Length: 426
Image 1 (cartoon, helix red, strand yellow):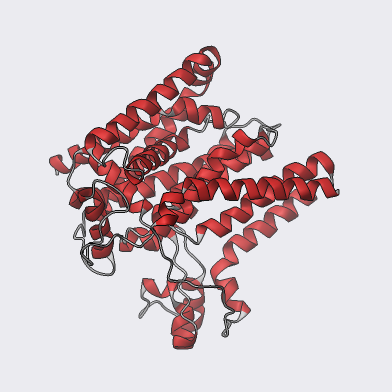
Image 2: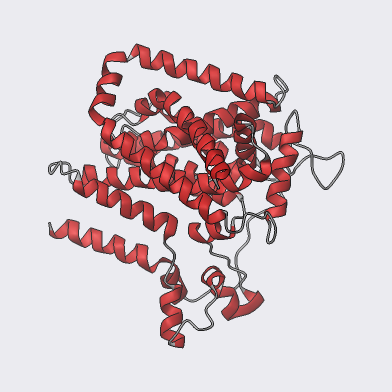
């Protein structure tokens, strides 16, 4: 038990160090957040370190190794040090002003990491479902010097899969010096903790700027904790529907909440609609789970751009474009979704400046195309070695009824409508 806690502590200390090292860059992006973006510092660190390790390995400049990983950390830390020194007065003032909320966020991150590590301790075996595949990808990446990594099933071939999230796990494994059998479970706990902390920061800042005139810390803290809890521990309305239909939970089985459309309609509709807490429990280290912290960072970054009233410049769109590239290499479905979100944000900026004029649409199109090309460029080594099994876009012949949509999205829908009504009334 003591040895397990020491392992968790050493893993946390690594993440803590990376977060602190990348705080200047994080602060630069999230200056107006009440926590100066501290909830995202670890995510930004992991994102950039993993990307440049991958890029060096893909271009065969440096092999994937412990030395290369730490070299990338050192070089990026120097960039952060330069940024902090350049803005020394303002940066230190922000730290002194916000140190309490930074300490609070680090505390909830540590608690969340320890809590879910404890949960995984009840069933730490990497067996069942698709854990073997994810674990195999991680180990194959760890054994590879260059990318794409070797295919663990087909000798002489490379992994033809969205493996970037697994590479992130491999990079942290190299940096920590721990065995992959341990870091697999620690990564599940890490995603839980990163998502919890990032959701806390995003939810808290949304309320902080919605009620800016109040300046009451109680509301952002409550909103942040509620957001974090619902995102990481919440589900859909299937349990309520089941209780209404059956009157009890005697035969209830928790995976049913992620597959009840399949159960009702059979093979005609193979819809699977998982949510974070299900993925945390079953502990399959899939791309959609590995991408969760990056998605929260992306949304928060766009929100930060809005509240800072940044002008749409090339440099302000570099990180969002890089993240789109990472989305495609980690969980491809996130790419089109958040590409649309980015496009809507760009349109919003242009609309505020020019209104519904032709210039608004042409400028939006130009910036969107720029982001798309930049995202493709950032992920070009991946595209050159990847062959998708999908060959086009088709129409779904079978459709589930609308009431199922309400079962899946009823709670967010009611919350959104309630918020809009409340805002209009007040």
